[in-house]
Amino acid sequence: MQSSAHKRMRVLSLETGIVYEPVLSRRLGLSLGINLLPTSYKLCSFDCVYCHYGRTHVKTMQPAARDLPWTQEVLRAVEVALRKTPDVDYLTFSGNGEPTLHPAFPEIAAAVARLRDRVAPDVKLALFSNATTLQREDVRAALAHFEMPMLKLDAGDSETLAAINGPAPELTWTSLLEGLKAVPGAIIQSVLVEGPVSNARGAALAAWAAALAEIRPAHVYIYSTEYPVPEAGVAQVLPYQLQQIAQRVSAQTGVPVHARWIWCDA
Image (cartoon, rainbow, N blue to C red; front, side):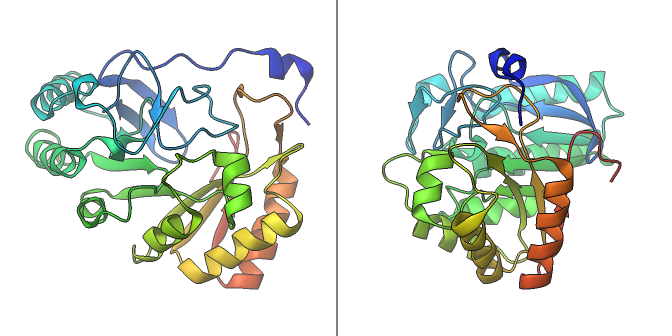
């Protein structure tokens, strides 16, 4: 369980620009972040209880274009950063919310891939997405530009989705599931939490496992919260518990499930 001191820690500050400083990750190595979202507020289609950027104050599937960077702004910022730091391993689309909400996301992804090919061809592209826009064919097609497209799935039913992820009103569990099923060989990332709301045990965990069996992803990576969280009572699922869940769900579904945490060597 989390200590009271951990609960009192402040959530992380929003990114202040389009490209943010390299982060060292065991999974991605040295990664430059790309933020396609506003710098003054978090913009997302989810309001997850564990998000280390805090609560979502603008929760929508249709963001205001005036608050988003233009394609050419993104390309200029990425090129400057790549020429300054050419030895990074990944460019990672993440930032202050859900990157695929940007109306020009498919165009930007393709343009960044071309820029990468020209300036730093050894650098790979990663995406961290909550999968809520996968009903759009152009977003699904844009995943082909990424060597590591990570798609979120924390819930296997509408009740758990509402409790853990707090989706925008127009989103449904069915649309999320159908979007993920439409991505062959998907790579799924799931955050499991404990507390008054839990997706790590009982019916919620069983429903999540059943959804994985239906989606048939290539790989699933499960984590728990490692950072300050905005919702009191949210507690960490311990590493040994993550390992037990990964082994059990892999055996039940035939889907490769891998347990990960900050100090994990793999």
